[in-house]
Length: 292
Image (cartoon, rainbow, N blue to C red; front, top):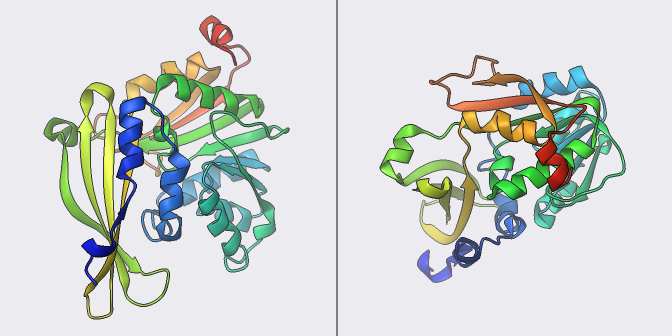
């Protein structure tokens, strides 16, 4: 059996989104839920940073885009209660399977299937976390504001939102993308052999869109290709100068901005941008007209 003969793809859904402006992010994550803990779930740079912020704020912590529990179970392990939301049922099913294997205190993690733009949990939190580029899957300014306002409604007075995503690489923007490259190798989740993840990036600068076409290729113990899954993800990248006015228009006050999870300053050399914003007592007039 060749790779091509059993390839599957989510490009149709992405193409529909590009044409109509409507997109089901959940469906794209459903397609890769079983693979997520291999790539990009191996990303660990932010764990200590978010743990420090969560311990400082105290329980319960709200995580937007909880996924398979990569961060949530780490927070639970240090004694914090976590309420996570995610729009992908398949990702949450993986999280539920992991409860018995992660150790620590998995019972401290509660999850709700919900869209970050519109959810109601019936409680308030001292801290909300939106980690690992989750916010970038909101592809319009209107959806960004809807999500920020929904999160704000769940923050206690003085509560904080912490979110992180990459600084758009200038070389990638100038080149209009990057060619196919191997990004990760990890054991096949269904046993036997490994999965190799390849990524190809395309940039639409006029719309600030980054399309990532990831190919997952299964190989047996003899390194022979077995099958392939192609998945397309679309993000709207944000430049650092855009973020403070966006947060302020939705009822936040920026407290800190970092250029790395070691808390280095955010500057022109930064590859990461981490924002800490506090729930402001008042929302700007425009925010009140558009709804909080």
